[in-house]
Image (cartoon, rainbow, N blue to C red; front, side):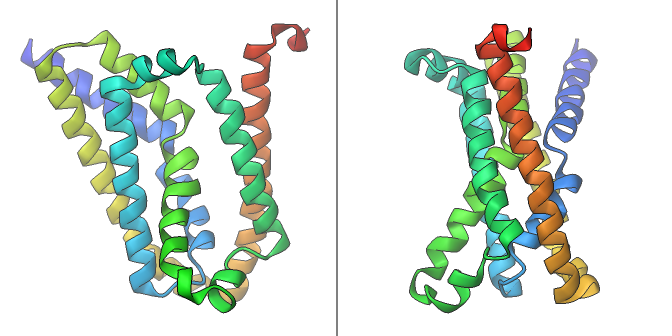
Length: 213
């Protein structure tokens, strides 16, 4: 029985890697934090991963209850997340992301760092519909206090691994240089736009089945 529970936690961990794809998100993280100092970048990585841990833990404990209470479906969440991704993508493709933070809003720079860490990094990029739905499904399928504690420990381990990964971002930044970062920013903006449209399309097909016909 114990080996079966461990297998469930390993399966949950692997599922999170597939749903979140932290390695694939890393270039986006580099683009979003290219204008920051190393200390600010590390703080953003910390804020983002703590936010992911909080979001997924809340999803595990009360996700389905909250969605039902507010009458929100997961597909509605997909549409909202897709719109959010599109707005960020437009800023990235125009090359304006980060310029205001550096020159015109220095007094609110710390707030901006937290906002970048939470939106869009933590949500919807990392703790997006896939990760949230997976967490809710596992929490519902395997109830019980011991299983819940095991899932929370698995989430903490996953977030810690992501934090270590994003702390290596300065090496990637130095390797690419500012020109490389600018190119990646616009390419990632295009990819984010496509991802946002995919989120919207998936949610709309489920909300309005007649659109698929």
